[in-house]
Image (cartoon, rainbow, N blue to C red; front, side, top):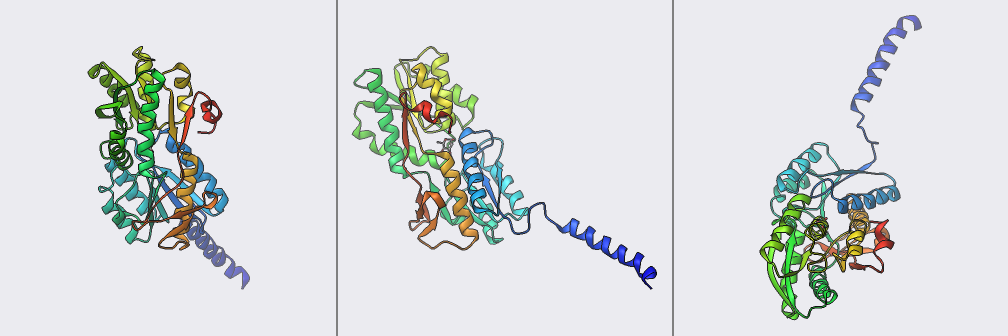
Length: 336
Ligand code: RAM
């Protein structure tokens, strides 16, 4: 009897094993899979945010982070990436958007399929996501960038001067809001004459060329304000290469690890940024709590970063930016 049954049993067992192997997804069954979609791969700021996301994943225990994004900062590239994440049936998508409106249709589709969607850093319009996490309040960031330009004039030792903005892409939600806020407070800084805005698309080479062009088109330019980590680094390099250190100051938002040398060379006096590791950590924790149905209309927990207080649009701000100069930039250069 057993002899007869044995081959049949082993055949059944191997079919069962094969089908288990076939059906088993690459991730553990109960893992919460959170996709961190960035503006583009290869940007230090987002890599630091990914470190924070990994930290949150470890703390939460059953989270897998999928760190992804297009090769350049386009909405089309992000739409492709998001389509593939929908096909992979991730649990949540946390995106820093290249365009606040262009991503709405694909993210609405994700939401219809039960995927939780948040934006962080650079926002998506409310129809396309449930929560948006800004690094800090927009008006504070705008005012701070103008103040940094005024600080640069002081460092240069002039009482008034020209300032230009080198931004990321023309459709970048965060930079556009910050520039709007900068323009609102400019009248309070009569020493600053605002002369131009250009776009380096968060590409190192384009940002560099735009910075060089700014200096050529405005021979009396005193300050380049770049509210982007890619732009600020490229502009500092361009000022150095053009031999304009001490004449044109660069400031804005950047990473101590990338800029310490330029502060030392004198191409920059000071600059600001919030902690990008914390931002990735907070975004991941929010996404996780949404998946777990652990949020209310007005608040959601961000782990060690406290509680995000959501306004009527589901937006929250994380913390205040910090200012770096020759006295402290080295202390942070190893962290982000
Ligand atoms: C770049 C990106 C990002 C922005 C920072 C300051 O890394 O544009 O969205 O928040 O700069």
